[in-house]
Length: 156
Image (cartoon, rainbow, N blue to C red; front, side, top):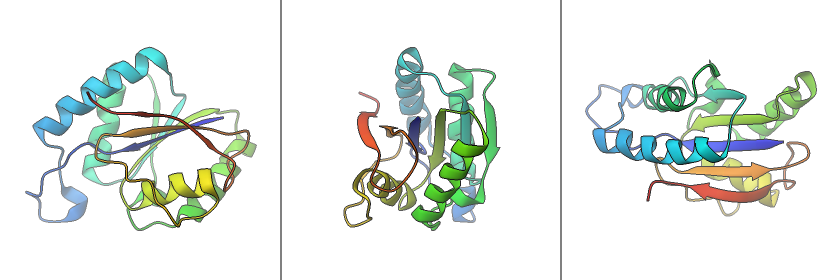
């Protein structure tokens, strides 16, 4: 199973709330560059994203380069969510469906803690993924400490 952890692109601060922060033009350009390279090498079967505006916009950028994907907003992917809850949810998904290439579009600090939990089995050294960075993880089953970091994708 492959899990692709994508942090939303660079977002501005010109919004009335954190949930409504939009991507910047620079963030859009960098995402497009990275996602184009990514989709030439990899394909995804399902995308889950936080309901925040910037993650929805990031998912839309992916849909532009890999059309016909299934997208689902999930409150489990907001910044303050529990990494263990996400791992438990992924384990349940892997049993209930045959999806083997899942992308999660989310935020810091969740993405850093989640990548650390999946690869190291704890959250002591969260991965410092910057906006627009994508971590590609491989594992037999989604569980703490069982993933291998394959590659980190980002704009050049």
